Length: 83
Image (cartoon, rainbow, N blue to C red; front, top):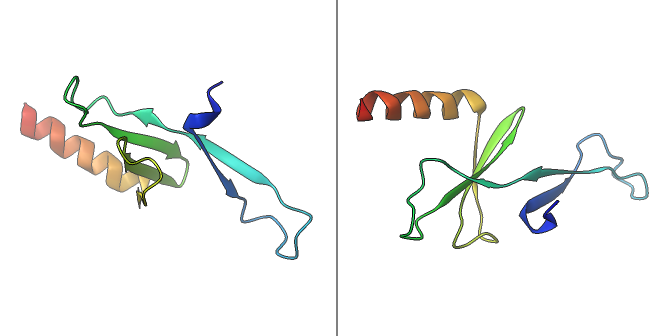
């Protein structure tokens, strides 16, 4: 498993006082909508309550987080636009 593509975050169920922390991770993957050889790649990480989106050229920069329903609507609109 490639740990470089994983993003770790503290679970909201962890205690705030320290010591009793649970860390979770999600895996970034290149979106199938990204360009090929041009280097214009969008990466996404899916989570049950959020979709994380980032520029692959700047993986440590802030990323966009949206709801899965918003992502689904975006993909539906793109399919309609390209049809």
